[in-house]
Image 1 (cartoon, rainbow, N blue to C red):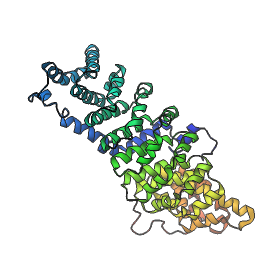
Image 2 (cartoon, rainbow, N blue to C red; image 1 turned 60 degrees about the vertical axis):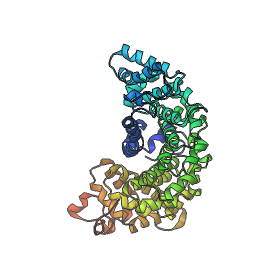
Image 3 (cartoon, one colour; image 1 turned 45 degrees about the vertical axis):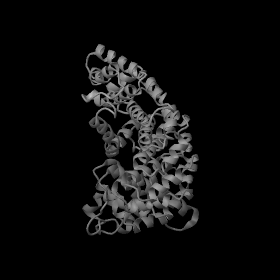
Image 4 (cartoon, one colour; image 1 turned 90 degrees about the horizontal axis):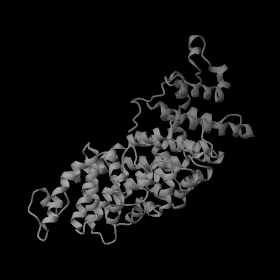
Length: 467
């Protein structure tokens, strides 16, 4: 079913997800991007755990106390590991006492004590959603935010931002009202010049924007968007990836929220990500983001066209690795679903028919369906042009035939997926049935479905390589 521009935002969100609900789709994206999460974020978490306490805490690990540290301070430092274990305890009373002690340490006059308490809380919150919620429920966020002030030294900013990102991450997600106050701090942190601070602040925003439209709106209203767009051009992939993820989350919202992305000139940045030498995960994420923009209204599709993004999208659809091709297919198909006739004719002029046809033999049934929908929308425009007197034939049907798409559609009549089979039959009946009397096979072969093209194998010598 095609998405129309006037459908509700919830339908628009699920359009990208191929008929699964938005929450299931979001989990699918989480699974596909697990390499980024583990390599970029979880690696940082494990590194901090391996490194032990921050610089200056050697005494807490059994080393000699630093000069000028009082015995009382020393005792507090030495007690931190035990407090962490207490928070992880199954005893609720022990947990409550430990979290209370952590809050007190965050108010210590000693910056070293506060910093190490921040680091320890980050490890606790990163251990599991249960521990994260325990810390948040005990009021741990506000004393943490107090550490993120203009007088904090860089090591404190790094540790506190990392801890804040752990407060925001995890599935199930934290109660949004508990973490929403972090947005004002994050709005300041993303203007930092330090790569570590930027990375963790952007990841925190990506977690907070991953959800319903009211969450997305809160992120937009925090004023982070102009800076997020700037960070789409950041030279470090560690910063760029979570910034892009946040922008991508925002365009899963309604049309007004998506328009915010366009109005802040994010499209030229997305074009840059498609056309420069970025890693696969970034190009894939950029295509995903664009696909949710082309799932919007006609003005938003036109904005993508005017940003000269369609040509590079088609180029990726033709020759990129398979994971990127899939996202590019979504972007093109969504544009055919909500676009005007002139917009769809522009897509065809950019060469989208052949690569859409080529993907009809891919192993992913969802992508086959997406490509069929795109081709069907193109055929509808060709039929309308024919009926307006542009000629005696549907030119787009002929172009699909020339691209070996007709043979592939015929072969889909034997596909195991019922939706694919039915859509293939419908397309053949609607756009090629008039040729039936000339080339319809007789006998037993006629029972296997329509066959209007040649009998050559549609797979070239050597097979297809999707990357």
